[in-house]
Length: 272
Image 1 (cartoon, helix red, strand yellow):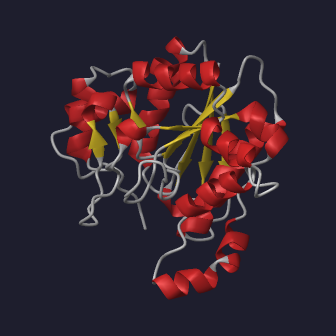
Image 2 (cartoon, rainbow, N blue to C red; image 1 turned 180 degrees about the vertical axis):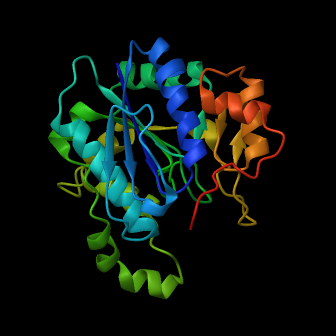
């Protein structure tokens, strides 16, 4: 059994098709999926629950804080509700699709075999392969049993911003949620700070999804797709239709609609 948390603000068609992946493709290969959708979009968007087992609608407190609240609320559900056979939770933004089931299976099997508790990619530009620049929050996997004990989630994004505000001002940088996740994870393994075993365990306990890197190039451009991995993060409808065709997925009314659409004006469209 796999836990799947999708968090979303406005990419409604991306979301619905991803729910079809979850309840068809993923469920068949992971002995079932418990799907949670955390949502903070406007009422005027007109979203109605679709395939999710749990629908969490929460207040939107902005881009980074809002994303933190969505992830926290969804993982809080999984942490508080023990579901038989469920050990790992896949967390994805609504427009982040993964269609390569073998890629997911390999990640989770490696986590299981090697005692990894968090699987992530480096989010920012990386000069050193040993030192990531923020942990990806649009696509990651967490051992939820470990989280119940260590409480990486809920992330305290507000506290993180306040603590390092002067640094962000000095460096002219944005306090991203990805930085907060990396900081919060590392902090769990830093007591005592001068114990070599602590930071060695830190490095051993997270799985770097380096196949997805780089996410950002030195030019500042963001990579949006990794076709060999079946991973697509652009909300562009044409790219998403090409992904469905490449991976031969059509199990769902919204996937079928995108595959047969004559134009894409409807896609992710809603009242503002």
